[in-house]
Length: 187
Image 1 (cartoon, rainbow, N blue to C red):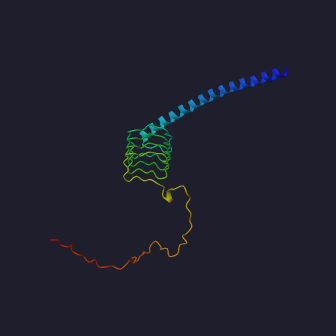
Image 2 (spheres, helix red, strand yellow):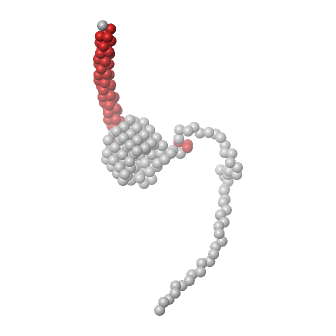
Image 3 (cartoon, rainbow, N blue to C red):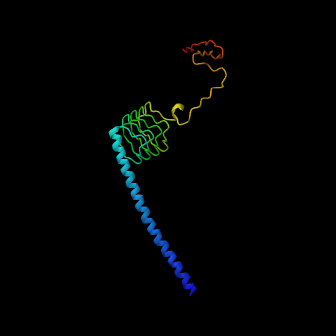
């Protein structure tokens, strides 16, 4: 009898575990759908804001499809554009400072004079992009998030702001005269 009881309790535990699994999976799936719908709505709203105001600082535009749009001189600083598609878009003079651009496609886009300093472009593609005067890399120290210090330089012989620094030319090897030899004439 005890064996039957143990067998039934194990069967009930297994059945309740299966029921709990299905309940949780349905709940999680509906929560994911709700989250995906909310993010899609947020992306749509942010695209409208971007097109209307020409700026969307700190906006959530993950996986947005912005192919071929004229986004000249827009401000997308600190925006999340991870895995977005900006193929053949015009971003001339755009501000993308400190934006997250993981896996973003800029293929064939005009990003000339755009500012990508401080942006995370890991995995981003720029195949055929027009990049004349585009700024990549780190932000200048005065614009970065690192707090400034008031420590004075301890380097000796540093010039004051109104001093003129004159450097002497570096001496090199002595000049030698080159003798030109005419080629031999063969008859």
